[in-house]
Image (cartoon, rainbow, N blue to C red):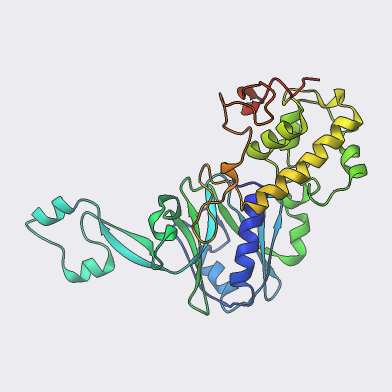
Length: 321
């Protein structure tokens, strides 16, 4: 799932592209993930000819403010990522051999409509490069068109992403927003320490809890704990204030570094340009099982299970408490 650095990168890149543009059209391949009464037609009616005023991030969510009293709320979830470019709907022959050997080929009218036997209609990037060539960018589920002809599309292999239209006044009380913890790049040392005072449990799951602190997932919890020297199985209640301060400093350091590298593309995530981020080239713990620790302490990165999730760490310098 895209975490804080990936979502922040997407927001920063899209901000350059779509703010100030008017939305002229909208398409979705399925109605259900679009959390809108009346479906895509009602959604389009609400957003058509509305200018994009701003695009921001809260935790792992994307918030697009448009003219009027509505906001587009997007959760990319496990494999979704937003892109910006231009796409054309085209029909593809699924089995060229079958099509060639057919005794009764489909009529030109059916071909144009994309209803021919043995074919499938899908969005194809009109721009060459990764938007067109990288398979991770080709699972288009939502597509917005703007007045300048540009388009914003959601590629999502697993189809878990969702889009909602929310009244501006209701946004702070939205369940997904209301229950979130503080932003890790905005919290000071005193407030960060206070989060741990009455908290109990294993350290890695606590860091990944969005109600505790927002935006940290599997990748960056591993990286933060590796950098701070804290074991993922450590009990939060056993940490000293100096340990918590190390975690805070590592959190800021790692998240800012990942944003500078434009996120981690070891899995599904891509930039709005369709390109990969670069953090996977410098990560030190996540999915580095069997490799020598980057701190040159003689340790080797190991993998364990913590709370149903994997955790990667160096048993040499990450001390269990």
